[in-house]
Image 1 (tube, helix red, strand yellow):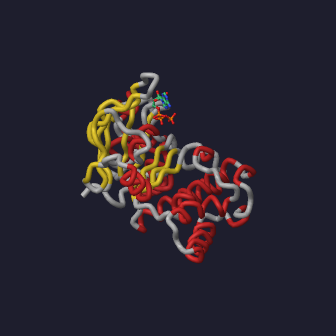
Image 2 (tube, rainbow, N blue to C red; image 1 turned 90 degrees about the horizontal axis):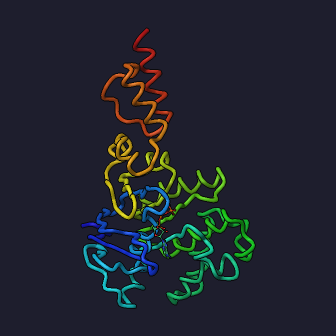
Image 3 (cartoon, protein in one colour; image 1 turned 90 degrees about the vertical axis):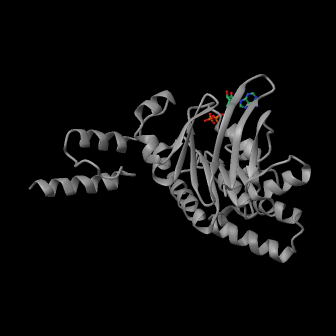
Length: 281
Ligand SMILES: Nc1ncnc2c1ncn2[C@@H]1O[C@H](COP(=O)(O)OP(=O)(O)OP(=O)(O)O)[C@@H](O)[C@H]1O
């Protein structure tokens, strides 16, 4: 069973921009998927369709193999299971204080106050936002808003998390923290789709990469399949991660032996080189 799939969807905005043209793909439960593609290639529009905010003019979206019907009740139910963290947190945050913001959805679900307080406290702690938990949202920095936006969604315990550019505006420490969280969450059964321009992160993190270009999906596959395909990357206006470029060159020059697994980061490549060095002396 796929948890989320789209079949032949097309979406045009009111001004006539054809943002998606016959796009199909599916995501399995617990899978870590990265959407990559140049600016304006259709990644965010796909997110908005997946969460039911936009309704495609053609094609259909299935949640757990059942097509979504767009009735008010079903959309509410879909959005409680498929949470979206927007690229711009200001599109998502509107309550006065951080704690009120994170509690809002739980109050809407009419949970008992003590349960709400417990859940909010746990998520504030998990996301490391205790130092500014009582602050008004509009006084937070861009990166802090980003953390609150994620807490806001996580507290609702979604089954699928859509994250549009999750680390833009985050400093290095919070980038690492967020990367750790989105590596941990799938182990707890949450399916995550991330839209990112950070191809090094996509290579390390994702199980599956989906390449967007001008409203089309050019290819989806494992990080190795995608990032070793230089022609595809040129067509998609993307740049091959440096670690793969170097690995390819070292293999072609015979410095590294053939058939070593594609390295996901420079630490692995360094280990290959140390091994190659000792094999030669
Ligand atoms: N509200 C809108 N009205 C009209 N056109 C839009 C609207 N939102 C997006 N578009 C257009 O739809 C196309 C796809 O945009 P989308 O935001 O989905 O791309 P993206 O891949 O997420 O880009 P980025 O990497 O820059 O965030 C672009 O041509 C964009 O200009």
